[in-house]
Image 1: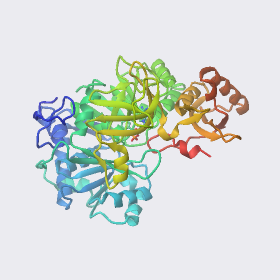
Image 2 (image 1 turned 45 degrees about the vertical axis):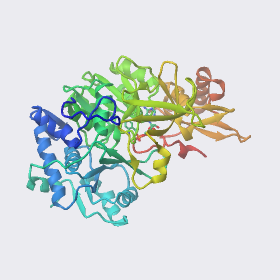
Image 3 (image 1 turned 90 degrees about the horizontal axis):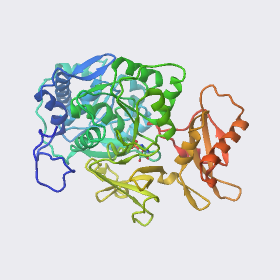
Image 4 (image 1 turned 30 degrees about the vertical axis):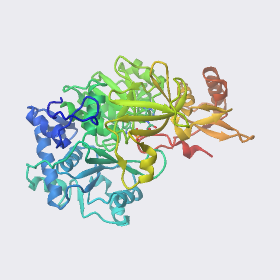
Length: 526
Ligand code: 3UK
């Protein structure tokens, strides 16, 4: 896997990986497969047809030439509002090979968000799937500036597909370095304005080797299906860069990920690795109570984005037979840096540190805490973003020397497993003791009637903070709410430290979430 790189003697390289002085990552992820004889192998499978590695390499060159031909220059940014389809691969890798910086954008956002990103990024180009025209086109009108090149992927005169067909299928690789700017991802977190995290050429190599290969044991004969979309750093790895790192096959589904669509896709394409998020695993389990599906092709499942409750891990294992490996990653780190792994799972935890990364947990004074104590999680590794575009304050607060401040509160136990407690600003102090909203939520979802739960702090009559619960019930449960609330209290008091039970319980239809499925607890505070 590493013989396409040239060893260089420098202390700044990530553990175990070396890069040639001139290193453009498109060669490792695209062109290498042709050189290694994988041209006829399927790189991508979709409901609309398959793409071989040879067609992928050819299309990447055509897309790069199409962008250059329109006047996008090396170093320029190109925003991508592109659905999960082969064109996503072509634009992303074609840009990188040509020295252009692709910026995949969340396709669930609105015109106001896109207008901000068009202005903030100073992009020279924007490529979008026709499905998103209703938000992208008004954004172009509203933005403070208009990119010189605006292209639909398909369906109109002058679209990308048409320009690719007319473009040359050979493209010289632009010179680049392992630590040079390669692509950006906007991180919005659960609050605040989006920040462009700038990633380097080496970052996808580091996540591919240290997480996909070293932790998951991903191999050439794997078939990867990610319910999380490619615009999300999690999906970008699962559904594109990991399979391309090992020469495996990616399955893409362009529509919304529901239990029905994900099951249909799995039955049709038989993935060996499946990547989901906790909310979807919960909804899939609920669907499996009413129907039987053939998910027997799966070797391992992965969960990230938010913590996976132990109860969902157990129920999935009972029902589907596969284990879910929970791991924490972030846009800034590019992918997962603490994870459970095959043969080494502690349900309800994020697992242990991934090879190539270091983690430490700090108290308010910046000192490392003892095992069993909570603090702020900092991580270090070869895939972390160098800086936020145009945002020196946020860069200084988040990228501290080599270390990345994750914004999460964690406890490391005696055995080295990391227990998630919540975002730093979601932690509650109840009776003077730090209390993790996640711990109470995990207890609530163990109850057979509860689908999802969120805990926030609320001041009681004495202005003291106590936990308040917001609960979504499983479908068709029209239980007597007062009786159910009593039962939930009993359930919490039995299983949690005394001060942790919710003092208020609200039943709601759904919880406020970000487009990537994270609960926005701040919206539930009074
Ligand atoms: C939270 C988790 C508990 C945590 C991501 C895998 O989620 C990803 O990136 P984002 O930038 O959010 C990062 C934040 O999400 N989180 C993620 N995973 C877990 N909390 N347990 C988990 N397993 O607050 C983190 O700081 O959207 C996930 C790979 C790549 C990613 N970008």
